[in-house]
Image (tube, rainbow, N blue to C red; front, top):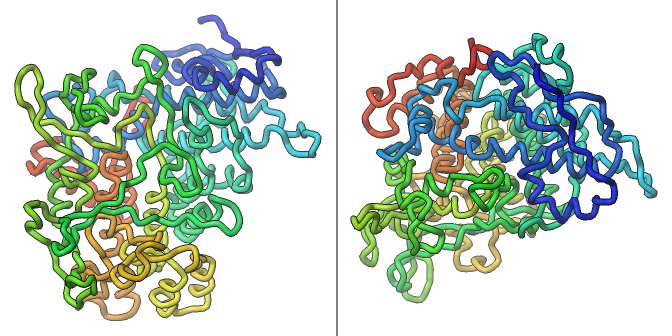
Amino acid sequence: MKSMKKYINVPAGRHLCAVACLAGALASTTILTSCEDFFEQDSSYVIYEGDNPLNSATDTVYSVVGIMGKIQKIADRTILLGEVRGDLMDINQYTSSDLRDMALFTMNDDNVYNQPRDYYAVINNCNYYIANVDTAIRNNRNEQMFLPEYAAVKAFRAWTYLQLVLNYGSVPFVTEPILTQEQADADYPRYGIQEVCDYFIQDLVGLEEVEYPAYGDIRGLNSHLFYFPIRILLGDLHLWAGNYREAALNYYGYINRRNGDNSYYATTTSHYRWRNEDWGNAYTFSSFDNSELKNPQSELITLIPGDSIPSEGVYSQLRNLFNSWTSSYGALNEENNGKVSLVPSTALKELSAAQVHCVVTTNAAGTMLADTLYAPSKIDGFDYPGDLRLWVWYGRYSERSILVDNVQTEGQMIDKYTTRNVHIYRRMMVYLRMAEALNRAGFPRMAYQILATGLNNDVIEEKVLPYCTSLDEQAFISQFNFPIANYKLYSASTLLSAVNQANTIGIHSRGSGLSDANKYYQMPEGDATCQNAADSLAYQIEKVEDMIVDEGALEFAFEGTRYYDLMRVALRRGEPAYLADRVYARSGKGKNAIQTDLYNTNNWYLNWGGQIGLK
């Protein structure tokens, strides 16, 4: 048995420098030392000892920082496991064997991305903190001093457990710190997705209003970006658990409360669309907010900070997997010699091209005409159909020929990966998941409006409430308040009069033109199979859900959400083919490219050492 190790104790006099040195500490400090041997094969020891209360500001700061450092280690795989196994990315001749096995569903215990101990390192550190922090200590304003850290750590644990169970399907569930060999050798209950969600819904309720600790700016990043908002976490947990009303209300609660009382968090009007040729430009685009600034209206909500030097700490490789050149769009990416390992799939390109792009035309005087132009094949020399978010010239993905080893080679850049940090949550995710929850809660028309026009109270009054057939439904919808003074629509009908004031757009309009005027993008109304109102509603829910799934692909491609989105819908419908058929169609080669039977849901999950994963 190896010797036990204690957690790092920082002298109280170093509290002020703790915040100043927080970024460096992310890579090196934890409340306890590495958890990498916990649940490892043939492990017969634990690495912690003692019962050390966390009752000083110094201890709590370094403890939270240490947990953030552990989360760094699972940052890249959070994106890769959610994207490489989906249908929107494909492999090539430069793809590593570990990533290739991930894409083909043949990962073994030695795969660098199949290391559950890294998740348990986070979890056990969180368990230790929660068990030992003294939340009863109050300051001279009678505030619980360490409640902000306590809430943040509970959120870290819930998010990490959710990632773990989504990838492994069934996991040993431990909420007490492992401090002895006897505890390490004990048998723990195995929880699936439902049980994990049920536990953490109860664990987080009541902490929604707690403000997370403020550690200031660290290496140019606002430390508030390092946290997982509890309302979003609760939304995700309820969404996976099938509690759709609760999920929708929690997502809305984040939107409504993000910036305090009487605040708003609109979608903004960022978009790519074709313009009328008479205006002199074929296209227009409002730059998407991909910045890492923290302000009331910033797109980014949560990131996992990475290190800047490959040889130190935990360095994200996502930029090198995705990008042939640097963010300057000029210099060759020397870290991969311009050779990317992951590329957009045939399926994604076909989905993007299949969208009908709606262009609202005007006359020379700028007066909007009644007719509209759909799916322009060529405007001002540009030839690109469909949704412009994947447009190779000005979209989020770019292609161009570059010189590699004195040979002209096709290169790519995905501008979602231009920094050392890994983005986890952003505003559009909250809105689209709220749409998914509303749809499954029985309100497909409200979900559709999030896609087509965006929400404000006028939209809800005119397009949603007339279809609420009971007092219960009306009461539920009345909880969603999007004042028209704060949420101003950018649409075909307001294009001329309100373009300068608008701040809200339908998510589909971010790449496919003005969707509220698109006759090919309409609310499904039912078909001949619908014999009554219940049939029509069921039909609408399923069709709007398909629209939401497609929108998730168009908006969040490469961001690590796709595989889980397909999994969630397939499990909800009891249709494994919903995931399997899409993944098999990834490269256009059909099932022959992936030999694993994805119609068997057990094959959707990872296994490790016979101890973790579905048996």
